[in-house]
Structure formats: structure tokens, C-alpha cells
Image (cartoon, rainbow, N blue to C red; front, side, top):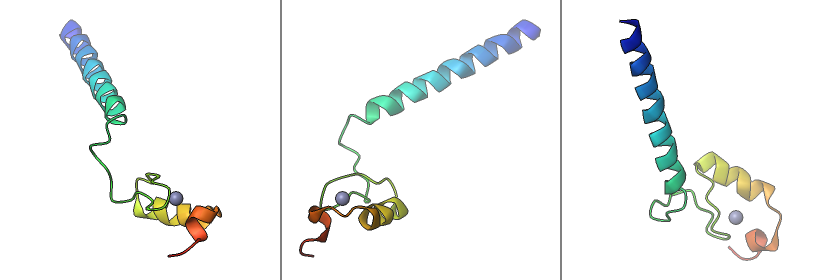
Length: 67
Ligand SMILES: [Zn+2]
């Protein structure tokens, strides 16, 4: 029983690693573009709030010129 539990834990860790690796690889694929990408500098802010604060924080010309 005890050994079986240990195996289960090992397998869960492996699944976790797999998921982690897949997520990492996904970051390099531009196929999934969130709707929260800055239209000016193409920066992905991952969330609407993040995009909002990105606009507020960034004082660079690219964000202030024109609309
Ligand atoms: Zn931006």
C-alpha cells in the first residue's frame, strides 16, 4: 500500500513536470495571442488590468502620440 502511494506521488510529479514543460514551450509559440496585447508596442499584458496598468505606467512616446 505504502509503495503504491509513493508511485502515485511520483507519477503526479511527472505529470506536473510535463505540464510545466508544455507551458514553457507554449510561451515561444505566437499562436495563442491574448486579447490583452498592447496595440502600440505589441506587449502581451496577459490581462485587461495588466494592459490598463501598462498604458498608465508607460510614458514612452509610442503610447502617447496619436490615438
Ligand atoms: Zn505598450
